[in-house]
Length: 312
Image 1 (tube, rainbow, N blue to C red):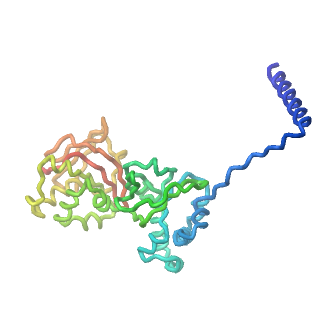
Image 2: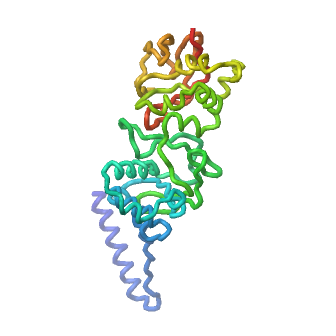
């Protein structure tokens, strides 16, 4: 009954509106201006000559369909000057034929893309996963806000270019996927750790590993034990630093309560407690907390910790 009454009311209103319109000859017809149709990320880049090298790279890497299709992407787009500063031109890209080189270029480009739409005002101080994945995990990009800076050096020089499938931020330098050492080097909070790794000659060791997990103490963690680099020799530093490294890629979700694992220092074992976050005992030190987890690198994962592991 109610449905029929509602339909009758609508018919009555429609008839009245039609009669009123037909009698009022003076009122002009009104038409709404349609909203502009946005181009896809690929189309926006294609239409802008300052992205000609980026477009050539996207085409060569086979990513045109991805960046033309549906999605909510954020692309940190290097302009031509960013590519040229690395000696990369359209001609250089077009001449690439080796499949391994094309795959590497694809991975670098995917490292410039996030899987969600992030406006410049929404960027935070964090590590965010990109579309370049290792073992199914997005390799992390470090973001900082006000102004937006990526991996501690790349700047956003034009922000929030709208596209139908996301948003574009123009950047002044290329981004390269980070190793576990790069992650430490590009974060000032790990400067003491980097200095210690350098003195112990462990930087090439970690960079050369195919996979590892690094529990990375911050500068504060080192200062809490009054650590002075000059007090340690290379031989004394090595067992301390290797006590922070596991031989394989272990994400926080893979750590179980009560797990015991041996580090690259065979004399140091870590015992985990996951009842409230991720904590562990290691060597002489108890109740070490993971304060930031799962910073994915190309050759492993980094977990930030609040204390330094000291071997027995």
